[in-house]
Image 1 (tube, helix red, strand yellow):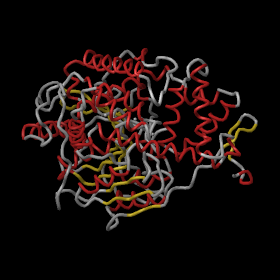
Image 2: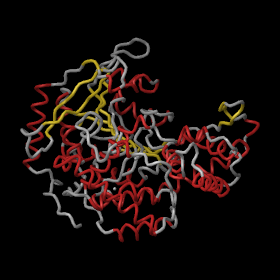
Image 3: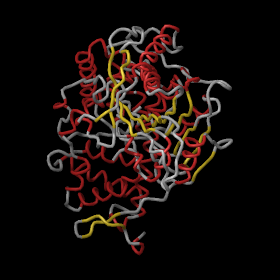
Image 4: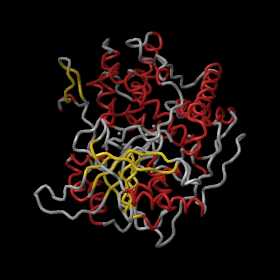
Length: 535
């Protein structure tokens, strides 16, 4: 499930010829016992929190530690790997200095697969999180494979950035053949660089690791918030360990239905991105007097296509081609707070100033190792999680048909996930996520109606499968990640649940947050648009 690496509120915060793996979908007795053994060991050892290593880039207010988990839960006494964990302890007082009862640890995962939650505790410094940070230890961690947590790699990071890239919405047969060859080579690279351990990086083990982390933190029951992909293995956890759940928040839920994991979820995602791309172009057209990119969505599209053609002929700064342009504007589909910056950069480029576009779309060589690791974990987890079509003609048929109506993201999504067609390893059978009456405490699902990265149907499906869950919808909005952002209505539901265990009796809705203010370039700086210039 392609999702942004960074979660909107927390970050500055992307889917058979091979034999099937032994079925783990029903959580066999052996696996359940192995998790219990590992959790008991972790509870005894705890986590020794102290100063964070410089490599984490965290301030001194954050403490770091590690927890050991089995690489293979079929062999709980075999090879152990260490997951890095971060924490800021509950302040214990509210903004007025009044004592607040500690409610334990709130563990967060930002999604991916491949994203790290190590920066999460810093969110407690934001105004909308201070009350939660007073009651909870805010705990982040890097899942297996991510960062310093037994990191995965599939290629030399110095080969990650291949220079200016094309972004054909209707690729030629020769281009498709080239990308198939690259996907095969990437899959072979994952197997070669990671060896036999590669098969153990999947969502079921991420859920099992979460229970070991719970025990290491000394929590009898887990309070957890997952965003995007984090909602999927959070849902696996809820199904596997319902009696270990205290409270769970699923923010921007992906569709957990077994038949959706992950090929069909990616098809649905590509279709949804077309709608968000249209939303962005409509917003830019509304502010034509600021950006000069066209006063209709169709005209804005022509401006974008003109820039793409110009970049194909002459990459900006020698590094930004049509592929980098598409990647930058894909981020605008995740978070509408990116809209002013993206529109401004496109406008400036077409007027002869490429610097803003290079700044937002150009490669960052210093981040290559982190980006390569993120891509490797994403690929390993999604490829290991479920069977995928193994014939190129099936991918080509499905996505050629889809690209006729949703060209913006479709083929880029294919190239991201195509290594799964040629994966050299066994696959899991997805768990049928489902809980019955009384099995699971009530949980909270948050979703934006026009989210592209996690289409809204996924939240509806998760709500149907988890007994007692309540769905809160942000209407006519499309941000990926809605908890703790600028929507006060959503935040009230989040706080009421985490602080008091209170949920609405049935589905609830919130109006969209205020629309983004455009920014224009004046004197070399971006400034808010004057009301008199609004078109």
